[in-house]
Amino acid sequence: MPITDSEKKQIAQKARLHLKICFHCGARNSISATRCRKCHNSYLRLKNRTLGIKK
Ligand SMILES: [Zn+2]
Image 1 (cartoon, helix red, strand yellow):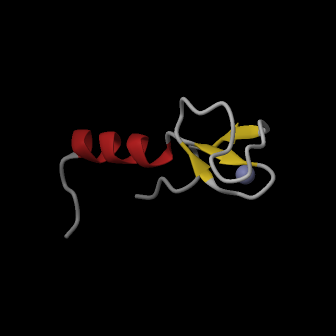
Image 2 (cartoon, helix red, strand yellow; image 1 turned 30 degrees about the horizontal axis):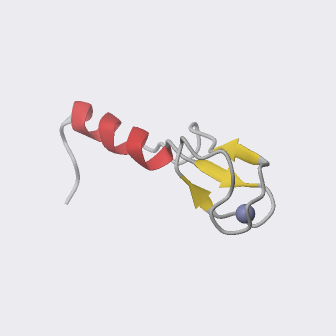
Image 3 (cartoon, rainbow, N blue to C red; image 1 turned 30 degrees about the vertical axis):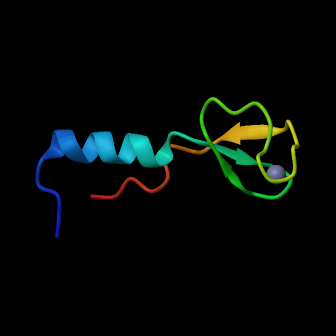
């Protein structure tokens, strides 16, 4: 079912992309995480928020 409400769509996309990815193992961590929950690596990056936004 497509989401027609653009405001809701933006919120959904934000929530989905608002996380950190571990450089070491690629695990997804919460935005507030300072270390990876899987391998405890502190080298986390923000997920590229421009990707995954489609029409
Ligand atoms: Zn990791």
